[in-house]
Length: 418
Image 1 (spheres, rainbow, N blue to C red):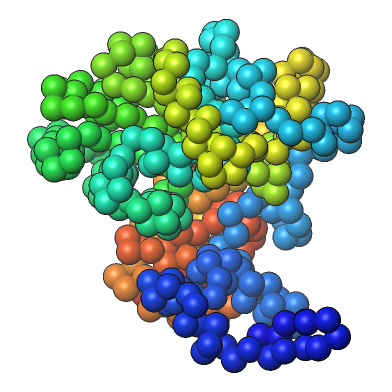
Image 2: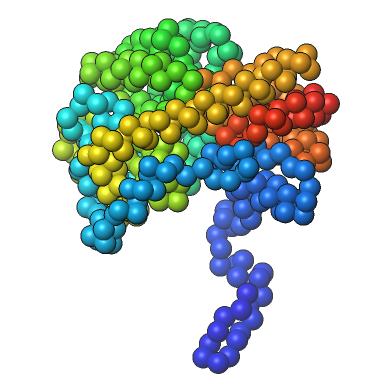
């Protein structure tokens, strides 16, 4: 490391700098594993290699270019300096929060209790700080989005996982109840992150029967302490069946209205509006009006990031007031949902042609493929220029970045790598 002192440049040995770093902070990888894989894939492609890169968590067109929704960019260019430059309120613009909530629950006339956050990740982090004590565990279903573990660890909490049911099945009620009850008895409270509908990384959604079962279990467990169900809603605009998504959201609204479980949502504009870099989202409890909770969320905002960005909040407000823009955006979402469906079906068909099980897709950017040794299979695929993300439960494949015409190549390489 070098440091400029006046006109002098002082060199500080790396091992000396390491002594300043806490021992527990010294063994991290240089880059996020998913971003590292993506960087390698891009570097090899730049050298002329034939690469299939399914690691990226952003929507790409069939030329490998980032998809940016035209309707959103038109609104972005219309923003005035006063809609961009000033600080937003600490807890976020209330009109923004209401507008974002109404995208998913249009019958609500206000956001309830909540705050603006730097993307959905910020909302998840704030939920940990306000609903779990340090050292306690958040419950989620596996496979899960990898940064769940990082967000939990960085905030002094842990993950407790339970497997999602296999496609076409639902949970075994007594076993799921046992797992949730065990954690509740350990810590006297429960925070459940539920990435549904359009789950990352499986591409599946819970069935009405599965949701009803979960609701019944949570109702019973409220006798043991407070329960917070946080819906992680990142991919709802990209779905095979918008009607099923709306039905699920209505189920959650009815359950929230009972008032036995605190139900909230982590909302984001990253995927919904292809504003990944804008870092805008919200942690909201639309069916709850609670002054202490609102004050706690505002205090968390102030203590961690102070204000979420103003510009994307202004854009969401503009969108909510422009019916024609909303219609154009809905058309764009439908177009890209169909594109994702074509890609997922092409992959599923290619797998079946190799005498392998197909893969279900109901929504979102990803599907998950089984692998007996995910790291080893991913390494073999990488040797062939095919990049996937290994997880404990299998391989995450981003259909958001995979061309349909590449599906047969991918399926054959996957089969041979098994």
